[in-house]
Image (tube, rainbow, N blue to C red; front, side):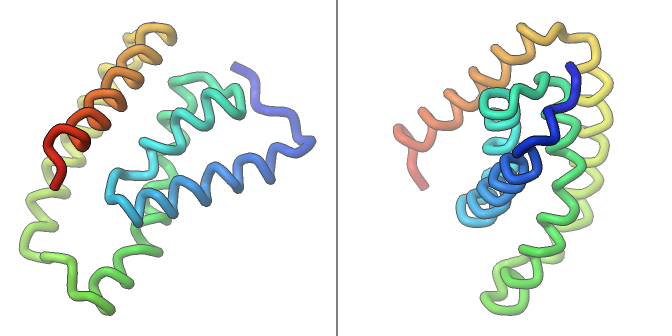
Amino acid sequence: MPAASPAGSRARFGAIGFLGGFLGSLLGVGGGFVMVPLQVLWAKVGQHRAIGTSLAVIVPIALAGVPIYALVGGQVDFRLVVPLVVGAVFGAYVGARAVARVPEDKLRGVVALVLLAAGLKQLVFPG
């Protein structure tokens, strides 16, 4: 899908990024749960591109949020970081390879189902 038009796109993507960073840090859901749907619905970005772009934003979001959680509240368990990173890097590689084979419309449905399942889980089993 072609890139969004320059007129207003920086502000729109800035707002999407703000919401992704804010809600990702506030709720711990990962900015992609916010940024991917907003890029697809609000900015008309293709599903594959929205996912890839969202992944590129994760490191800066983490660099901004981790110091606050670690230094202010002591809420980062650094003993768990390495095994989580190893699993996450491997999972991201496998997922990125797999998603390339999924058609855009089916991928959109999978994302919607995962978001729905996560929302229902929070309603039925909070905490």
